[in-house]
Image (cartoon, rainbow, N blue to C red; front, side, top):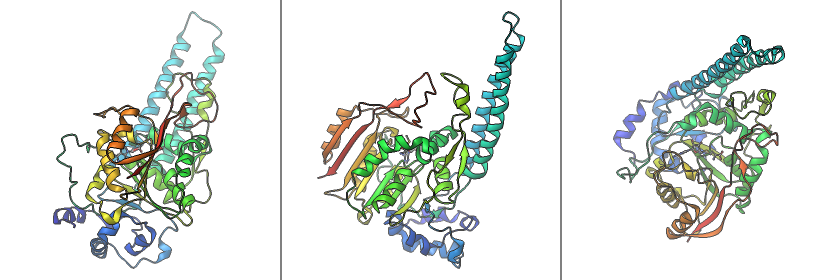
Amino acid sequence: MVSAASSSKLSEHNISSQPHAWSLLANIAALPLSFAIISLISFCTLLYNKKTALNQSSSERSSNAVPFIVFQEPDWTLLHKSAEQYRTHNLRLLQTLSQGLDILLFNKELTNLDNITGRLQNRIDRLSEIFDQDQDLLQTQVFVPFETTYVLPDGEPANSTNTFSSRTADHSYDDPHQVVAHIVRDWTAEGKQIRRQLYDWCLSKIDKSGLRIMVPGAGMGRLAWELARNKHAWVEALESSVGMAAAAASILQRKQSGMIHPYSSDQLSNEVNSSQRYLRVQYPDVDDLSTKQGHLSYTVADFLSLNGVVNNQSKFDVVVTCFFLDTASNVLEYITMITKLLRPKGGMWVNVGPLQWHQKSQIRFSADELYNIIEEVGFQIMEWGVDVAPIEYRSSDKVVRSTHYDAYCPLRFVAVLK
Ligand SMILES: C[S@@+](CC[C@H](N)C(=O)[O-])C[C@H]1O[C@@H](n2cnc3c(N)ncnc32)[C@H](O)[C@@H]1O
């Protein structure tokens, strides 16, 4: 199953340099019916025997940490780029504020502006301090390489010749602002209301325990973690962004916590109250990160790259897509992948999210068109609807932060393979 070409590629990876490389046996015990792992156990054993010391004591392993699976060495340079991008953005923001301060100071027409001048100076000082703190946290804790477990996909995806194949690297979710927004959405008290409206709905559709569930586009991993923990399920989170995965690993693997100022580097537009920018939030909002009787592993890969690993033993009972469908270049590829991953006759697809097709999307269906497609490819649609009330994306702490309102009315559906 494993081609010579791909095994030689893997051997280039400096696995032994990974901090605390996991022993394979420990991984197998920790992983759910991870499609890739099951089909590749023998190869991996070979690989690990060759590449890593298998004599680690169990005390060396992080207890109950979520394994992060990769098919190839993640591009760690992206993490450095993300941290630098944050610094550059914040420097620009400070420069804009300083320019404003200069204009105030050199203004000759209006008088008695001392108060506002002081306020603006204070804003610059406070923000510089906050940016330093957040930059430090991101660089030392969030955007850092994480411990990985290597497995190999089984050769090239079958449809790699497809003209509309979307497998070009998309780094938009490595953007530090995306990562910070997702930390807030998933792992802070500020995101609780949003999670209740989205994640709780997904959980309510799972009525059995012990199911195998795949969550593609898992972001910071909270939905996948809740499915594992509350539904005692074997869950595979899957995510293509290394930045997202790194942040998720800091929480789910290294069990780190922190304080961050998620609104500090928002655009200097539509601001209602300048002091709201300084709000500091704590993450994660839970003390116990264990998945209890459930199992969670997190694969860092493009969803479409699973084409090469999916086989009969690797079928899932449920695929949950949350704010994921509209990230597709060609959503037909996602739908094909979902049907391949699901157990035939009875495999369930639960979806919640908008149809805000991404810039790269080559095909942009409306909800009613999607309904037709999903039925035509063999699903029975059990539930279908578009929310009337909009839901914010990052946090909904009921504070009016902005004169601009940004929210989505997600499409929700449950469909079962006939
Ligand atoms: C809008 S975010 C939603 C994240 C999460 N599901 C949530 O609701 O918070 C979409 C996520 O899908 C990931 N993603 C986009 N295209 C992907 C692909 N082809 N394979 C895997 N993940 C992908 C992005 O990196 C991002 O984390």
